Length: 187
Image (cartoon, rainbow, N blue to C red; front, side, top):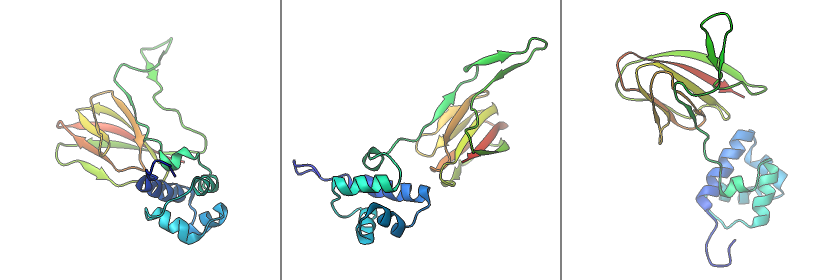
């Protein structure tokens, strides 16, 4: 792809193609057909071999309905942390009640709500869930490491985190009596 002798980031392209094809729920044959390329070419690219042209990658991005850059420089997982006492607060006029919206539900999403009671020990490691899953956690008592397996965040009472549930992630209590609320959102 580059005239200076450097090669395309084949490992990034390979993992991006597999990830985006899985997210779209398309077979190798269907993506190749939509892109107008040979199935063997797509298979080689997903295996991390070959030297794709700009035209091939562009055709694949159109076939997968993604931006071209997502194949060569995929987006980083979005993690959002809101600490206790942060965020927009609304107050009741008639009682001692306040509410902080930490995450609104996107259109066409479904959410499952869980209460977690966790004691210190090895982390609860979760493999990636279905594509498009987002997990939201609010710690109510204790302390915990929560989030992406490679970059968990330490949270205390009242802290909030949102992270992609379709990436490997953990929950590890750091204090006895750790409690949290987990919302798993599926689109």
